[in-house]
Image 1 (cartoon, rainbow, N blue to C red):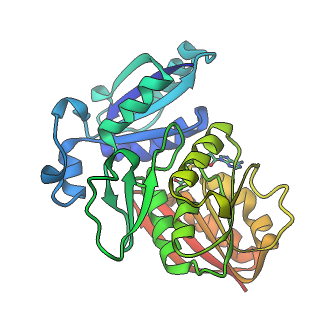
Image 2 (image 1 turned 90 degrees about the horizontal axis):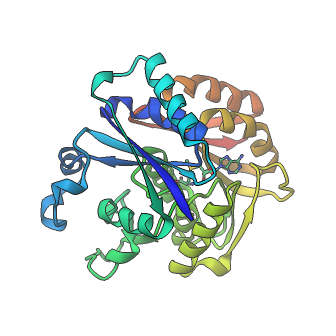
Amino acid sequence: MKWHEVSIQTKESNEESFALFLNSISKGISVEHSLDILKQKIDDFDDKYRLDPKDYPESDIRITVYFDETADIEGRLGEIHDFIESQPLDEKSAIVIETKEINEEDWENEWKKYFHSFRVSEQFVIVPSWELEDYEFQPDDKLIKLDPGMAFGTGDHPTTSMCLKMIENTVKPEHKIIDVGTGSGILTIGSHLMGARDLKATDIDELSIKVARENFELNGCAEDIVLETGDLLKSETGTYDIIIANILAHIIDDMIDDAHDRLSAGGSFIASGIITEARDDIIAHMEGAGFSVEEVLEENGWVSILARKA
Ligand SMILES: C[S@@+](CC[C@H](N)C(=O)[O-])C[C@H]1O[C@@H](n2cnc3c(N)ncnc32)[C@H](O)[C@@H]1O
């Protein structure tokens, strides 16, 4: 299978606007940071990784989207140019757009250049499958082994890492959990590492289901997880102690009432993928539906909310 790869280099301050827009016209995005930014974010980055500056974006970030071979790529590029024209973005004239056609197998190798092991929370460490042998972990580390393939969820996006922090503090072995929009499966794997064994992961995208299945096997947790294609909570009939969803604000908004219905008394809703501008509306909707908001994390224009059913 061939894919059209479209990558956009720009300022980090434009990430949120691009992420929202590109997620609305594609199945998912990846974001790579420049060497300067990575060095700020990851301790001892220089020592750990062999650095070839050619592998990293020259601008702050490079956002990449993939369209399958049947997509009207000229039309998509037109939409991207219209978006740039119409939005108040920083340093528009410096935005660089590049396109290329790639084979699926090549794509998997491209990923490996940019995706490295890193600590995402006190206990969770993300380790790509090809770095497993080299990673020197601490006794209390909980390793999420990952090969994200073409699914969203490497852990380096704040919407994912904030969920993992909430999972670390909330999930107990006795909890029954559903991860809606599982992507690479990362949040379900994190929940399994916290001891939960009654787990369900769903996604609307078949490719994510395939990647999640492979990652569950890589982490030795596939047997404890029901993995299914699904649209939000629409066909769910069970009751859960924790519902996790890292999608987008308007989609989270659509599922608040169903989440309340599907939670046991005292159950938790971990909702992420919410832009700061939508935070207050989402909180108001949650409170109106009968939730009490217990924790709000914010990073880089993104918000994650932990709400409890009374
Ligand atoms: C931002 S990614 C999150 C992936 C992963 N859970 C994480 O935290 O990194 C959102 C995921 O939600 C899925 N998704 C989007 N709309 C959905 C829907 N209506 N029902 C279920 N999944 C959906 C997408 O296919 C994508 O895999």
